[in-house]
Image (tube, rainbow, N blue to C red):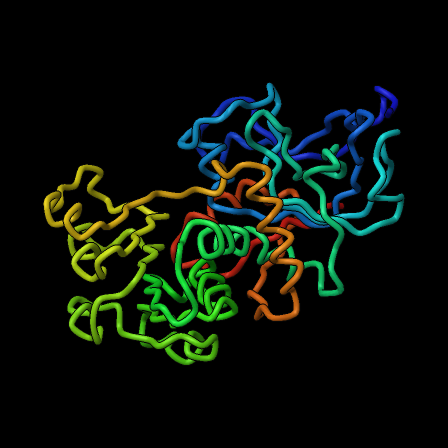
Length: 323
């Protein structure tokens, strides 16, 4: 337990809306229950899903003073009586706070359930924090949703993005042949990850050697029917982004006669069991991942960070450093 008079600096909002709804001020240091861990926060990641929660675009239960953020690393400051896996001073991380009624983590302290906390691997903690959100997204898709065997072909649309890069790396670890659509300026970077690259400009589909076994659209730029046309019989299409036109049509008879599958995915709908399995897979392969470029901002720039994360020109992973 913590004394009610103890205060901490935090970034939070009291109603959904634009980034200027975020306030930076003092809130009580959270108390912990018997199965919780109090973590002294070092850095908090800023993800697009955080902006969707803050704006109200992603509907989820919120606290009256909702602290922003879901992904964080820090050190254990105290543990509940039932906690067995962690001890004071341990370096830890989580990537599933700040939605579903759980308080966020962009604060000097956070109370985190033991079941949602993981020990930090022997890597740079900032680099690890930068990849755990796109990494867990990629791992769930590749290892849990797709039903592909080694040697089958996966097409990643938007292969140079954060999720795209993690999808490529996870798929290669699983023995898949990966093709990625990217801007030519990113050819070298994406090729180094093990993918075959093609220019994402209109007409990209003519450069495919044949139908592919699965497609993951991270870009939201490809018409649905065009994607379905590139799938083999029994092929799978997973969407993690949407085109600007919310209502689409497609050739339904061809779709079901080819026994194709269409699925949407957002990580905030993943179960705790699914997310835990993905995080353990990430930890198992921690040394294999190429680091993502990070940019650090102070807590006072929390609102600025939420504006930046929605800017397509910002290519870095944004981390807020806690005082």
